[in-house]
Length: 192
Image 1 (cartoon, helix red, strand yellow):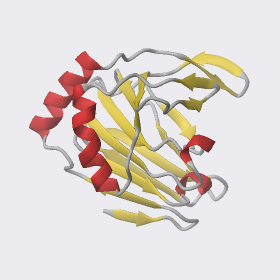
Image 2: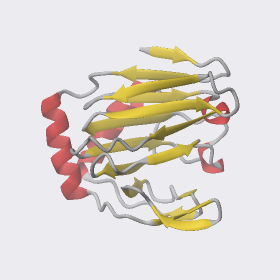
Image 3: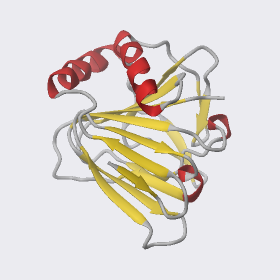
C-alpha cells in the first residue's frame, strides 16, 4: 500500500516483508545481539529517560544526534548485517545505519517527532521494520489537524517514508497499555 500525503511526501507499507518464521528468528537473534539500553534524552529543555530501549548501529563514522544526544554507532550485528541489503533494495536507498528500538510492552512509546536532523539530509528515506507485537503508528501534519494517517504496523511489515514527509509531518508510536508483548522496530537510515 502507498499513500501520497497532501503536503508532500510518501508512505509505503509492505505488509509481509518478512514471514512470521523469519521474524521470530530475527527477534530472538536481535534480543541476543543488540545492546539495547534505556538512555537519557533532552525534550523541551528537560532530561528524561527514553520511554523504550534503543541502540544505534552503523558504519564507522555514522554518528547521529537526536534529542540532544550524540550516538556513536555500534558495529553491525550478524542479523542486522543480513537485513541491510534487502531493506536497502526495497527502499531504493543505501543505508549505513539503523536505530534499533525495543518496546517492552504497550507502556513503551515514541512521542511525535520528525526525523529531520541535518545528518539525514533534506529528504531522508527512512525504512522501518516491525518485529513482534502490532503497534499503532500515527502521522500528523505539523499544522493541519485533518491531515493525518493512522496505521497498525504488524509483525514483519516494512514502512518506508520518503520525500518531503519529515519536513511537513511528525510521527509517533503511542502508548497502548493493553499490549503486553514486546516489539522491535528497526529504522534504517543514511547518515550523510
